[in-house]
Image 1 (spheres, one colour):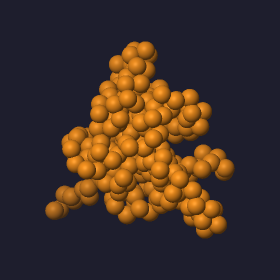
Image 2 (tube, one colour):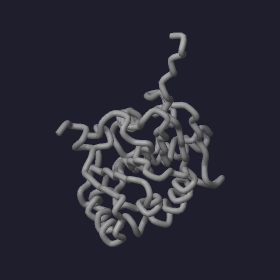
Image 3 (cartoon, one colour):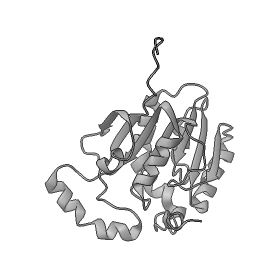
Image 4 (spheres, helix red, strand yellow):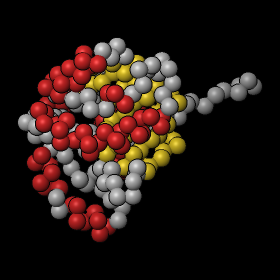
Length: 217
């Protein structure tokens, strides 16, 4: 295992707090995730990958007519997600251990690649973004929900003061959207918040399709 994979979930949120994760974050994260996933209109038979699926907080947001794969590096989190799969009898969900920065899937394999509140936790967000783009098919969509550094300097300077504390818990408050977008070739990038006061940004982008050759060529 490479050094960066051993660091990916050293966050206390993912190790010590896994037993309480759902109680802490369900009401904070779930409504936003459900809204965003439902508005994607995922077609029947689509292959979907969620990177950093954790305890499966978002699993029931996806339609049962898709084929959903969830990966996470923390086995204790995946164990809780798997219990939800068994309890609900979800036949369309498959879970496995996987590193967001080094995915085991082939190129251009998924129609949708999603990640919610994860990209600021991994040691190398740019590597994660490259991997998400790699496994997404041309024309497919990449969907991320996360806290990003505010573009308003006053707010950013205040939040930056908490970064040393949040880093000890395993995530950073200073990640900029631009750090992700400069690493990959994406189009139709939309960024929005589900409410004016939300601390979290939704980013939906499309992986471009290769140019078609004309008949003359």
